[in-house]
Image (cartoon, rainbow, N blue to C red; front, side, top):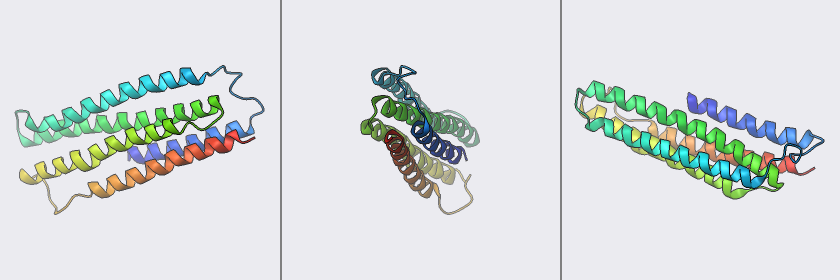
Length: 181
């Protein structure tokens, strides 16, 4: 559910930023945004976000090796995984906004930031949906905590990658549309 809301927010951000920039009579020079400053902020926030997501991914998988009952391990895993999804989605929103701002400040599309945004989001979406969820599924199945035959995490992962790629491309397109005055 959180990812779905994130996709809606990212789509609306692209629509809003492209439309506002296209319809405005001034440009971003009035606000004195420098592309180098935006790129520096982008780099710092991306590094911090990747570090947080790596830590939460590690703690999620490490939850299965802790002492205690299987149900407790499941709760610990779900807590860390929920935090991972939250920070991943928050980071995706911030990275898209900064990519759009950098493109608007430099008056050209900065493809490297959009590709990096998608790459970071996609890598942790793959870790979450294909690795962590699969490990979680097998853990629950091994401890008789799962009622069912298969997991739908791979379908969720493919949809997540598709939507994030489409929304990243949409934001780049809307920004380029807004730059053409």
